[in-house]
Image (cartoon, rainbow, N blue to C red; front, side, top):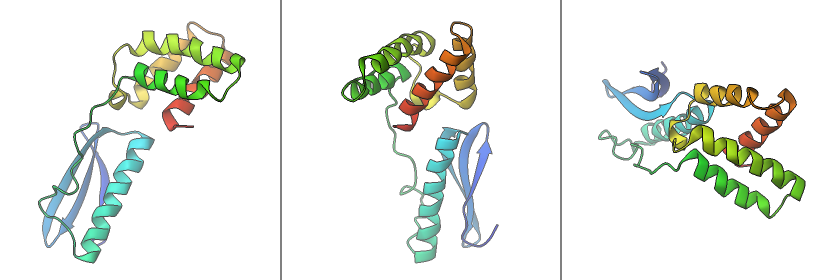
Length: 152
């Protein structure tokens, strides 16, 4: 590992950052599952630490870098909010598709929080939908869900 670089690691199915500074080893537990979106968040945090090391502003207490406690909303609540947002900009036909998916999201995810959804949970949702819908409809619904998840 080059001097001053911060690595992203997976430890006990969660992301953490690891690096050395002034001969000491540091770890910062991100606490998020290993997903592409969470890796991007971890990468941003790693870049912040690297910049602070390079500029002499590194905080060895790590308080500056620790994730702030945040309340995670449920998947159902997130999707409900997304449907309300989309309602203003899509046709009635498009809205009907979102509303149909909204029912499936509510049943499958129940009160599961967004922060607890891993790639394997998403795959289980897809497989669950496949038992109820035609393959073309499943693909369409996954595209809608992905739009919600990525904020499109």
